Amino acid sequence: MSITRCQWCTDDPEYIKYHDEEWGVPLHDDTKLFEMLVLEGAQAGLSWLTILKKRDGYRRAFENWDLAKISRFGHDDIERLAQNPEIIRNRLKIASVIKNARGSLEIIDQYGSLDEYLWRYVDYQPQTNQWKRLSDLPVSTDVSERMSKDLKKRGFNFVGPTICYAYMQAVGMVNDHVVSCFRYQEVKALTR
Image (cartoon, rainbow, N blue to C red; front, side):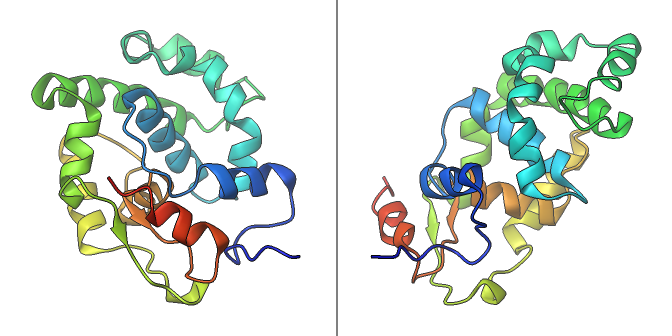
């Protein structure tokens, strides 16, 4: 019996595992929320599979997403990381991780957690869509536009509306599995 998945999922085992176990599952852990924000920004102009294959390298390079440690990184760290083949070696993307860590610490000071800040954009409930085809999915929404605008105002980089919407999909703020995908109902059932 064949399983129907979203059309974007390739036959790569790592991609299938990500689709089947992570994509669209509501995340509320600040460390994982930050990680996914970094990875979505790193993807800009690249394939998601490229980023997935470098995820462990990112964890090592960025102190297992320790915001306090990352926020203290400076120019020498950017130069060191720009030589690291385990991550995307784009200096602007590397610098954005540091800026976004600093901004995340400020958000945590203000809201208590990244979770509280981010999930308020969807009234603390995953939004379940009912897309039939991949082509039905939007690349951005009013919500991702508002999120992007506020994050940019706070000094974040690589957080445009399209990146923010992909982020919302990844961390389960929206369920954008197509209705024919076997994960659609499973993820829908995770709404708290």
